[in-house]
Amino acid sequence: MVVASDEAFSDEALGVAAEVTDALECSTTLAVTPGSGRWVQPDTWVQASLLELWSPKVQVVRQVVADAVEWAAKVADATPDTEVVVVRGAGERIDASSIFALARLGQDGPVSPLLLTDDGIVASAGVVTYGDRAAHLLTGYPAEDARALGETIEVAGPGAVTRAFPREETVAPYRTLLTASAVSAEGLLAPIGVGGDSDISEVLAASSLRFAGWSDEGPVLTRPPRQARLADGTSVACLRWAIKIAAPAGHEGLAWGDTHFANGLAEALRRLGQEVVIDAFAARNRATSAIDDVSLVLRGPRRIDPPAHGRSLLWIISHPDEITSDELSKYDRIFAASIPWAARAGARLGHSITPLLQCTDAVLFRPQGIPRGKDIVFVGTARGIARPSVVAPIEAGVDVTVYGPDWRRFIPGRFIRASGISHSDLPARYESAAVVLNDHWPAMQKEGFISNRAYDVVAAGGRVISDTVEGLQEHFGGAVRTYDSTSELIGMLRGDLDDLFPSYEKLDAVSRRVRMEDSFDARAQVLLDAAIGTLAR
Image (cartoon, helix red, strand yellow):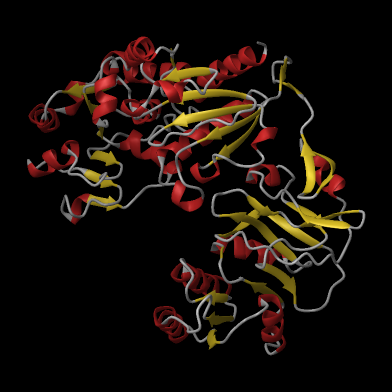
């Protein structure tokens, strides 16, 4: 592994090296290079040296590495028992699971991962050719376009410095493992050295994109009109949707509810025969967006203006206090997750706003038959404040099990179960809790925007106590109880929680109704009808 000492994530790279060394029981050589400066930063060198002390299989060298692959080949020559060499290039972020996959596939021939930029779009899916020309495949397109090609593709050369190859020379063609990815903040690309033939038209055969010629910037891709046949035998126009969100790309974005909301909605649209990509905030103005038919902006904490081409839909799911008439004027159709706000803001701002409430992923959030426990649960960040819905009960002597970051300065550590919980584990956690606490941003509470957590918990068979929002308690038929003050909340939590909620049978009926009427699938159908309607104008 080559680690530049001035990398923003050098500590992450060393952690991956430790995990890989331990799991694969392989030898690891760390070349700590100065990076953009003249000297190796002492922090990185000390951490690497500690790793060398931790494992006899780790060797640390300090040197300038001009070519990571050439350097790795020399290291391999000096290590007789090495069968597959995996190179991690300086400045490229790659997790251990991707390295494991590269190591396995690298036994059969050279392979590199999909290379992404730090805004989540493709830097290169490998080098492809057209006649005597060569280019990096899908540069500037969303990662979904690359992964639609399958697990691996044969290419003429690697797109990333990070790669794996057998110890012995092989004539096997290069491949790109599309299920593994590396990220480069600089969008670093390996030099285009074509070692084989991989026609771009053939590589794209499994994709909806088609090669249409060559410009000064490289390959020109188009997307011909398509029809999709649904499970019921009906046919519908297969539009290409770009869902644009305020969350960052990659691992950091997984901590945002917007990311999971977009993923759930994307899957629902795909079940309706649609093609969907997701643009993180940094990719909102992606240069290749002209190929998209519909831009759907999920309006969270940041304004996102749609591209000038195609059709545009806006779904306001939070931060209604920041919405302006100018922002709304950019869109063909506008939706908002609040019935009262849609009416008031539509009249005040001079735009037609259709209510479209938040929803849940009914595929994921559903009862699993887990017995209800006795713990009071809260899932979420502290938001940098002492959230009363959590802090007030704890200060009053009520035990609350908290999952989320940034809580240690507000509550004792014994109440913090973990700094987070995986999205896939949430349904079981919600169902098994005695009750799940919920609250809203002040603007959302004031304007009637119901948090999607309430939908998730009830869909999973759980029970919720939340601050009051107009229509909240009525919408969930008793599965959600509300309070107007922290003293009222504390009184509810000190009492018999079972007395607050309906019977199991009634709760189950509410859960089934929410999964049917308030699912991503139901909302996706509304959005698809709206998109087709605007395109027909």
